[in-house]
Amino acid sequence: MLLNFFKRVPRTLVIAGVALAFSMTFVHGAAAKYASIVIEESTGEVLYSRNADTKNYPASLTKLMTLYLLFETLDAHILYFDDVLTASTRAAGQPPSKLGLRKGNKISVHDAILALVVKSANDVATVVAEELGGTEVEFAKMMTAKARSLGMSNTTFRNASGLPNKRQLSSARDIATLAFAMRRDFPHYYHYFSMPEFDFGTKKIRTHNRMLANYPGTDGLKTGYTHASGFNIVISVERNGDRLIGVVFGGNTAASRDRHMEKLLDQSFAVLDERREEQARVREAIIESAPPLRLVGETSRFDGSWGIQIGAYQSIDAATRALQFANHKIPDLLAPAGPALVPIEHNGHTLYRARYLGLDPDQAKGACRHLAGSAIPCFVVRQSEEDKTLALTSS
Picture 1 (tube, rainbow, N blue to C red):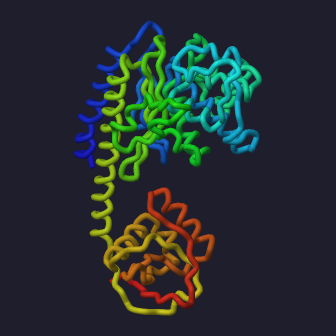
Picture 2 (tube, rainbow, N blue to C red):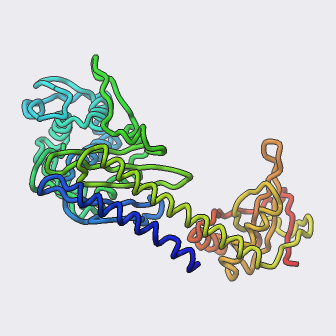
């Protein structure tokens, strides 16, 4: 274990070295400060951070909050996808990036979503703000209030687009929090963030987010840039069942920002892979040292009893090893139960459901809660009298 820790030290130093080099060269203007964070989504574990709570200009990452509030109105049935929004004089006057709406032009809510995600259209951000808040100033207050409710303590919004405003500030950690909330609260809309392009009238508009095409596993979220902020990005990537949310502030160019984000993600995925391998070695060592389980044949001893199931396996050996590992984790909680295999036919093959039976419902729920904390799949079951049960015992 100690040796494995020291093996990981050089990798951590590499991440820090990459970030230090980036921070020395990626300061773009007096206000832009390098900051980054990488978080494992399912646990919330921070795998890397640097200046993550420093207040910076979010630029167009701001539009994530504009979209968050727009998605809330859709779910509340205040607006619908085919509702039409109208551009005001103020909206039409916003600087690029923009769709080029003129005063009185119409845009559907659906197209507005695409324009915010893909084009990062400032004119459309103002259209949405005025529709939801009456004025963009009032909408910015709504944005800030929502940020506070989500735990974004370092964030203040002054407009819906991210256009320059010295009092519009956020942090890498806060933007990661917003990305997490977006995926948690609106999974049914998340697919918009992976759109590479969309058609608006006769125009085909392509995304600014090159990582969607260039970094495997990327499925969102957003890029941003102003002269004061530098090049920013918040990204979500899934590989091998692991999902990371990464944020970088203060890039000098879009390309160098993306390369840096890729390095941080590569290193973070590598840490997770190493950890998984270490956990597998520990698991195997535990199983090898545990008393072997012996199959004693079919029994009706557990008919009608409650228990837990910790997986279905293609072999008796794999199922019994899973039972041994679970028993190592919570021996006291499983002491009243008996290990058993319940075969089931599935697609022409026999699977062996690994169960501990003979618990009452509360005991079963408690066992599953504790196993879930060790990342062991578990759910409560009630043994059917029709189930063929193969009892196991320690030899």
